[in-house]
Length: 365
Image (cartoon, rainbow, N blue to C red):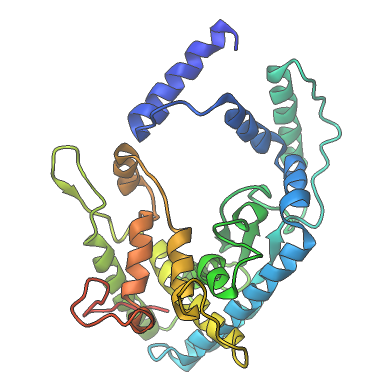
């Protein structure tokens, strides 16, 4: 790297990665290059990733799980004892309009053929790609909205629910181990990727998503009594997570999560795991129950969830995320939902008074 740019890279790393997030070393150059290509030419490099690691068969396997989890969300709405028939009907209308077709990769990839790319000029390549994107965005002015467009590239290890489109999107990047393994048992798959699917679907009915109707319009379609019931149940979740402290402030004083900041994600985690669990049980009706590595299928669902929640985070990063991130740390995204599920207590024969058995379970969905 030229001397005139290495100093900028070092300073950026020292503040944004080392100081704010506690990183021990800068990422290898190849990883930074891969990120740059993904940012600038994501659907081109993404196609190579999809063809090698995912493909059409993987999409169909995930689609089946999506449909099963959707069915359980529908059942959850129909049987919610705190929701009036009027609001239930509107919720079901919204549910039927959810677009869950964006799985793995786009049906039509973006055409980057007009961009000039060379092997020996990074700055020029970056500039050409940025100019292409600028022209692409300007060309949208005055035209109808393209609902087929993705907000994430295919290799992205993430997923999202877009309330304005009423859609969930699962890129191929998250449809890999440990989230999804085509060679693993179905119990594991439902606990890992099934809960991701359930999480994103539940976002349509969390503290933010419930404010949008099935067409993506910002509107209040809840009765006053139902909105109050929702808020009461959501407050239980907010209080629960506000009692969790993942790290101290650096001086020995515990830092607690902001249960209101993380409320939407926590509600979605709880509902998502519950719908994934019940979807798995429904999918296995009439099938022989098999023990894997000494664990029952019911236990494997929760193990899949636990394994997919593993992470390694520096204390500096944890302190930063507590005040900026609407997601709870992985440890509490794991603990929070399962202490609220009697199904976990039953699966592992936990007794009252033990750490993973809550005397005050919270439930919205």
